[in-house]
Amino acid sequence: RCSQKSLFLRDAIGQCAPPLELTEHATMFDAIGEALQTFIFTIGYVGIFLLMVAESTFVPVPSVLIMPFAGSLCAGIDPKFSLPLVILMNSLGALVGSGAFYEFGARGGKPILLKFGKWFLVKPQDIDKTEAYFQKPGRLTVFIARFIPVVRHFISFVAGLGHMPRVPFFVQTVAGATIWGTFLAVLGYVLADNWKEVVTTIKKFDLVIGISIILLACYLLYRFWKKRKAEAAARPTAG
Image (tube, rainbow, N blue to C red; front, top):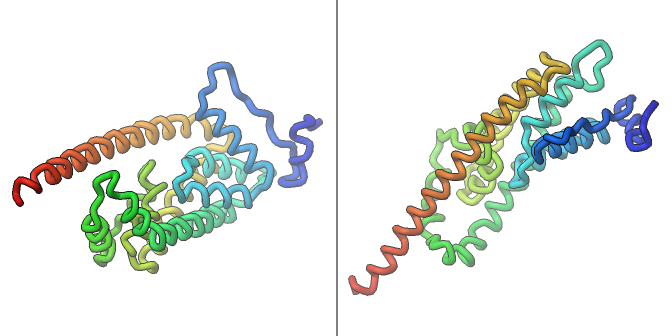
């Protein structure tokens, strides 16, 4: 018998939503994971699509908590989802979310940085260098970024800011997102009910990489800020 909370979820995939299994030792990350899984149960494939749209922007939605769970729902004698459709929703979500964030960077990124960048010692020349970098053919920056925690959330905006040609941008985005999403979904499919055990390890690894990238970015920003301050202090003397 469905609980009052999960009764309305039956129509989405034909069964009651599982109760949240949060213990007193559950972390915020666990609570977010349970909420995302309930969201997928609520609206099915559309939920996967919307979450992957969000994951492809600056919204910190972890795909490692979405795709293995969705893949696990494709396993068993009575699967609730189809694995090819789950992977398709992942790719379409990445395409739409990354495309929207790319356009935001392409159309609004430069005006925003020209107006507010001075507060962070960002010069117009820095924007020009970004454009020059992304307009060189053969770079796989966007593709590689799809596999890196934290970076994957911002790479579309930066690529848009640099006016990376749209065709290679979308090809690299879809290729990277599909490979990563397929790996996670198949992992959940193969492990079925045991997917959480392996994902917990991946989650910790993801977290370590993410924190390391943030610390490295803070260090590089500090070096950049210090260099610009030194340049600003030396300018009057040179005149």
